[in-house]
Length: 449
View 1: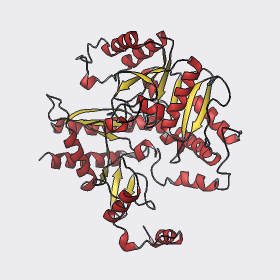
View 2: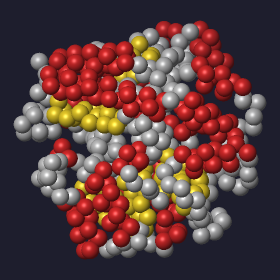
View 3: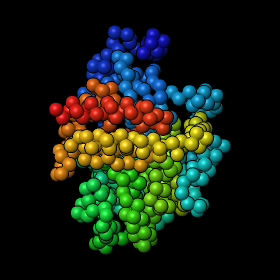
View 4: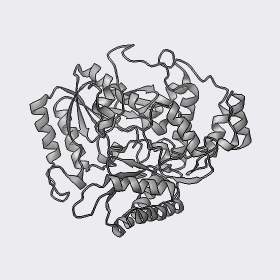
């Protein structure tokens, strides 16, 4: 952080000096002031909010890291992407706040039309904008309840849909998210299709879709009056699990047999990350409802609930103060156009395959790497005690993440109990990926000595 930005903080009334730009100092202040964090402060340094370039991120001591988190899938175009910054500067004079769920404005309408056009299915759709992925999930859930008159949902284990209200009821990836909090809606929960650890003891080659039959039985004994089945096209925070398309199709068909809606949670996997605008397209299924978030906002807080028209039984059935504010809507429209013009979706497929190839080489080399899986630039690496037993190795995963961040300067996150996730920005290059694989190789080697 340079003197200019230190002076800005001083001008705002804070006595900040250059000698205080130390990770330990600001991590302690953060721990004293901030109520909670999702990550271990013993692993990650305090980020410098004034620096960053593409997939390069910095802490306040000036340490450079290679980032493969993409801001947890938020930064589709990396840090301080010049064309994006230039467009943002050109619209700084627009009105930043208009109550979009109360009154109309052109940017929000155009964005709604664009979102409806890129989501699967030729049916008439409607869009509700919000400020987060979790809120987008809840908007879809409210619409499904409003239209169906039903209150029960199908969810999966593991799954992550958010940490508040109705979305929390669907979440089941970590007991820390839910312990002590009441269930917002009734959820019938079955295992997510997880071929590497099939809970029914099946092999991919001769699978007879016991996961679908388990859902059929659950509906028979728990209640088939479901409003919707809510499914991630890839199980994200729960462990980067890629379900087989035939299982997704079977679950979809069973949902429709029971007169319910099918909803795809695209918050992390959508916006072209897997090579499709919506990752559910990889499975050949057209959802009734879709929740989007993260990358759709270009770094600003935005989510979108997409559903059939009409989406609610009447006006004022749902509303929020902030809804695709003019500047945010214009930035989102720019992102859609830029991703299309630059063929980023096709590029994500190519780069994702290249990333998986490199990680699979590490799988062949290291006994503790049990599985590598993903679609496009959404990839997971699962750590085990050994390949034969497949016993989960969460402590080892944690030590590898810590080594990767602190020693190899690879900014990476875990997922689930024993998985490392890779959701890099779309501007990552093959040279960057080679660098990622080399750094990760060292982290695994040093952590297993």
